Amino acid sequence: MKVALLSLALFGTELTTAISDRVPELSVETLCKARSADDKMMGLAESQSVADCVRDEKNARQKLSTVWETTSLSIRMRCQSEVLFSLGTRSYLDLLSCIQIAEDTKSTFPATVSKGRRRTPHS
Image 1 (cartoon, one colour):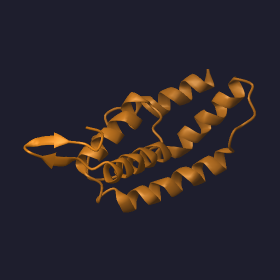
Image 2 (tube, rainbow, N blue to C red; image 1 turned 90 degrees about the vertical axis):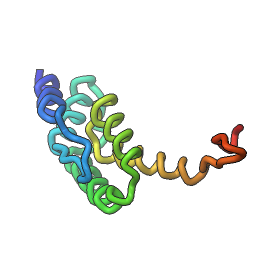
Image 3 (cartoon, rainbow, N blue to C red; image 1 turned 60 degrees about the horizontal axis):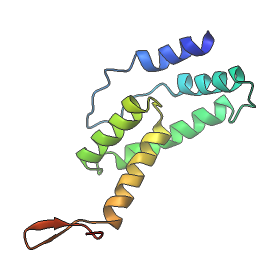
Image 4 (cartoon, one colour; image 1 turned 90 degrees about the horizontal axis):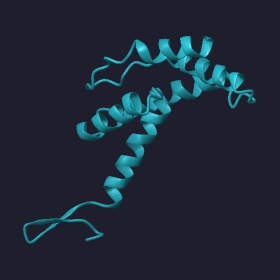
């Protein structure tokens, strides 16, 4: 029951978060407590203490604040949509990872234009 309430608190209140020029505001304490409660409910050892989880999420939030404005709007929109809405994780770590992977992929496989058609390195 507590897990359901934490999940509702975590996901239910922020479903209207807009994709914007600012890093979204997430409730890391609620997220970390919900993860801990999920581990306990399933009879698993706690994968990470709530305090360590909060610290990691806050560090990820700080890193996001430095890369957010320089990240293209299309990548921010895609990652925010995937992480915050589709996957439902609502985690700064997941959002940062999504952006880093998208940026790495973009720089590793840049599209090239040849004879009027878009061509990727795999074409």
